[in-house]
Amino acid sequence: MAHNSSSRAENQDSGQNVVGYLHNVTPVKRSAKNNLYFNAYLQSHDTTRRVVSFDAEKQDMMCKAAKATSPVKLTNVSIVPSKSTDENDIQMNKRSRLEILTEPPFKKRKTETPGTSDTEKKVEDVVHPLEMITVHVKVLKSFSAPSEENIYGKTVLKQTFQVADNTGDIKLNAWGDHVDALCINKSYKISRCSTRMYEDVYLTTTPQTDISSITEVEAIESAQTKSKALSNEGTISQVSITKAVKCFSCKAIIQKSAIGKVFTTCTSCRMKMLSSKLTSSFTCKLNLLTDDNIRLKLTCFSNMLTDFLNHHEKSLQTDEDVDDAENFLLLLPSVKIYHQNQIVMDMEVP
Image (tube, rainbow, N blue to C red; front, side, top):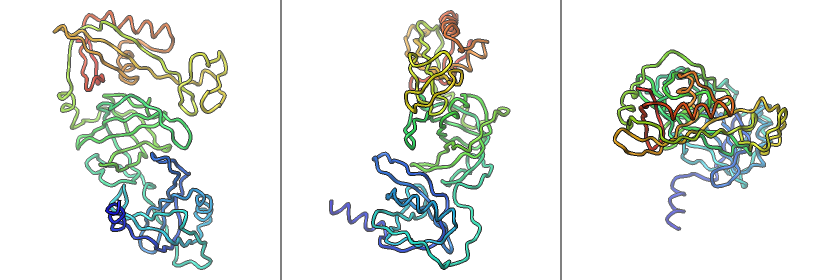
């Protein structure tokens, strides 16, 4: 324990005072360790640094100071190495103090804090976190099924994809409606997505992100990724397509028994809406009997499934459509499936 404390002391400079102007104060969040915190940026005389505050009560006062463009003095803070950039962060706790200054320490200059600009970039040039950028990429695969994450007390859908252009590939975390906006093997212009850092730089969509379909992007990793995937031909011996109905607001899954003919009240956020505004996603579990008489259990997610069915003029709008789609898959004389980690990456009729 003494060794750990010593290591922390070597990597941070506590009891410091800093002055400047606050920008981009975020709402209070909850960390993976269940701690409340929020972020901001402090523009000092010659640099702009991120502020991480573990005292949620300071958020309101810092918001007001940022909106009023009032100069502030932060006392008893720690200067610590950032976990997301190669710069230092300003860390605050309950012992830290916030003081509004009556005399500006220097003239406030117009500044672009990290994450506010929007520049078109190639994947190979995405090397710095906390930037707002636009990319033209092709979706190569999904790493996992869509999952529900608790963000600011709301349940939000998340799915991680691999995307690429002709210079390289990168991970993309898609949130909320952006999950259903992406389809494997399709190309998109993704505007105002943000770069983040966890072990390596990756992309994430934000509330300001816009996704639009474009002509196919030549992806450098496309052929390599497909060659790395296993491919099998055969017939689908068993199949089950499951429909999940989600709240238009918080994206939480709503049980079928709670859906009304005209109105539905979400059991998660308690918001009432027209039932026609509910969104749906699909998961397909299938057993493939290969030409070599091997049985494979695979999972096909919503984007891949709907894209394949649309290509064959099938839809999943009603329960009857779902039943018809299952019958269609079972009656295919042969199908070729590319898969990794039991997840379907691509599917075609030979």
